[in-house]
Image (cartoon, rainbow, N blue to C red; front, side):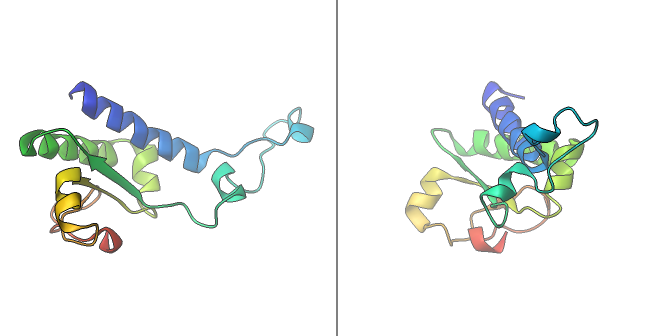
Length: 123
């Protein structure tokens, strides 16, 4: 895995951790196993957003490798795999987005490697 792919993988894992983080309220910190009712992100947002990775400053071959690396993390990391059961995620090249727009069929899904390219809202 390249350093760029490692950074992308770390971001994907970080999003998965954030999605499952349940902060302990200050008044319950001394109580063993106490957790808030809602995950941290739900205190501010009604739904967890889809994850769209925009890959820039790289050639087509490197983009394909980074997408494969993200898909490998999506399949192999239990926390990420659990998140992606309900959160949609994809990756696309910045050059393609600038040329065709976000709705064009250029997004690679991170969960279904056999699925054809799709628009961002079809992930």
